[in-house]
Length: 365
Image (cartoon, rainbow, N blue to C red; front, side, top):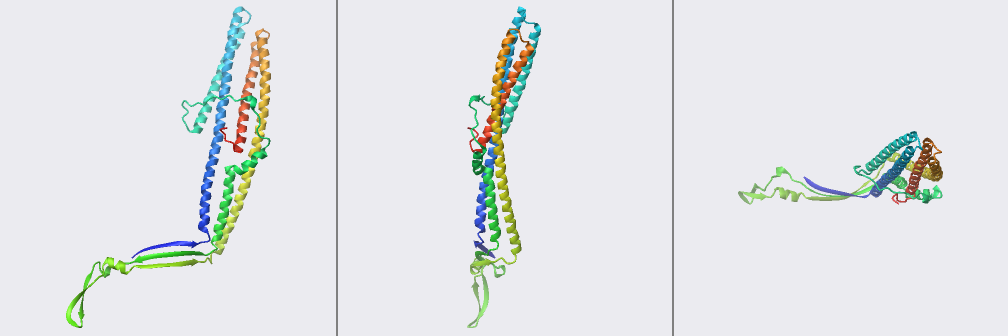
């Protein structure tokens, strides 16, 4: 026998509608999860990029100290020859040069490691990889935001992790509707066509003998009973409607509805927790940025003071009223103040970028 049947659901409590809506939510959720991943990677890239710039500036300062120390050695050598300075001063300055060379090596290693980390994050070869050095204007630094609330108000609407949690609530609401739809009857329409073939009736036309009373002589008649004829003779059609009414699954369906309702409450709690986490992160980031700005301003003042002290010490050293050891102490404090300023500068830049990140401003700005 051969047959072809088809059926279509006319009504099943809008289950197909709800499932279609869930499929759309699933697509949107995947897009939002991708956005979250991109944001996290972008923030890490910015952090690593600023780390490279930070280490490059430290390297520049270390190299400058070599040049300064070398000039001092040249000056002291002339003074030693003239009998004004003792050789001990020359030896101390040469020892300082060796220390400066070591600082350059350490600073270069830090630059190389920072570049390697950035290249690995970008998933590119680190061989020959470098970035252009950028000097940031330290005089234009200021906190662009007055408070954390304005940032949160915008972020709580636009951040993909919040949108994703809101979609989870919509999906849980659809799960409740799907669970309740089982209480409703379902109406289906079906149709089919079929035919059959019986082997014992013959695979081709046969002749049957018979006796005609009006003609006593025997005769034969051709009976068409082949494959094609059977399929044609046995061809039939059917169609109909079926109504299914749920009666004995009420307890199971009710339990499913209750589970769906509980799950919706859980997703609502998750949304509130994500909003609270977002507010906490923004408030902490705002406090960090404000503290970083204060630290930056303090570091600027420290550099200015140490620079003035270094100039005075240089004059005293040139006049011979300050020893090489004391002079190097003053210079080291000046160098440390410069390094602290660089650290404070890039720390503030990154903290500001984090606030921009939450405020929806592209990190490339």
